[in-house]
Amino acid sequence: MGAINIKEEIRSLIEKENDHHVLELIKNLLTKSSLEPILKEKLTSRALNAEKNIREGEVYTREEVEKKLENSLGI
Image (cartoon, rainbow, N blue to C red; front, side, top):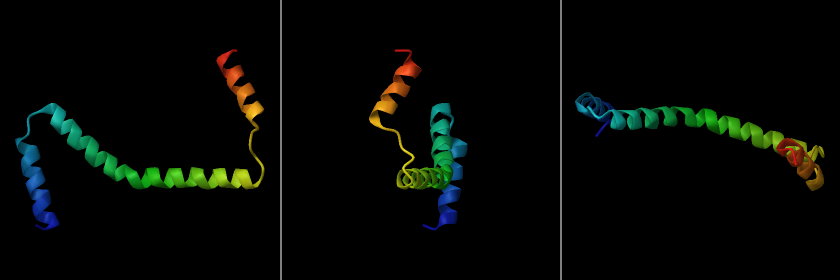
């Protein structure tokens, strides 16, 4: 079955569907699949920045992290 036939079949099934929950699930599935490349790009960028920071020594010690956490929690 070709892509065009699959799309037509999906359109037909969606047109017949009346369950709001099912339609929301289909919408979320299709939206998620289109966002995956964007998400992958963001995560890759963050990972590369983290590796750069580590190479350049821009990291916190355990004590610094604990102090920041205590301050943010008001401990």
